[in-house]
Image (tube, rainbow, N blue to C red):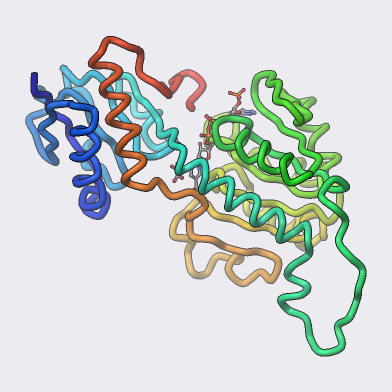
Length: 310
Ligand code: NDP
Ligand code: OXD
């Protein structure tokens, strides 16, 4: 039987996803009317993306699930009108992109590449960088993305610690959790990667107090969410040399305002939320497979827990 799937997203996302979704539904042998507008009571599934015109989910009385095109769901999970099950994006291409971004920036700081990029005639200090097995890297967040990055860093030879909300046991990674665990990982790190979701509990997690717990000269890479960091506290930590360099992909306000001090800071690299873009082809396959599961009576994959906010 035919079902109606509403692609609720802004123009650019709709243009990119329409053909990819049509193909993915065909592959899954799903008979779908893919629409960008519909009477709410006729909609079976909603695909929710950036710029969605849908804000009130109450009239969508027969909608069986809302599927987010983003991995981070902080913009929708707190919507009180959303009572339908919500799935977030977990996609091998997204994970691959994040692993490449994180390993690239960790290696940049580990190898001290900036020193050579900005070398001047006569700058000839032949001291080699340490080897990866002499370097402590911490990954905050050991979910789909954090765990994949931590494993890739272990494969490169780094000593990797991880931190999560609940206890995790990942091969080759020294896993910590809870408040005491956070203190431990911050105290002994050289490079920190933040791959946590933005929730009430993680808002401003890296604040003045937490920066003081880090050793001087720590490098920070944040592809998680801007709100994990107190911007003023980070700027102060940079001034004090606690943070030697920061690569930031996500910000409290995006695009990052032109007059934000991060742009001009010599030790800050700003990347425009590109750490791991959701690619239409692979994301469409993930969505189609998830809908096919529900239609076959199986549980929705990657369902968000509203209570914990991710
Ligand atoms: P997951 O939900 O799979 O993992 C989240 C991890 O964070 C889990 O290990 C979880 O702990 C941990 N966590 C959550 N809350 C807390 C807390 N209060 N204290 C300690 N640990 C906590 O998410 P993903 O790995 O898929 O994605 C992580 C984030 O990456 C997304 O939410 C999004 O913000 C960001 N992102 C950024 C992109 C970019 O391009 N910049 C692209 C995609 C995602 P536990 O294991 O115990 O549940
Ligand atoms: C996401 C992101 O959450 O791109 O998917 O940040």
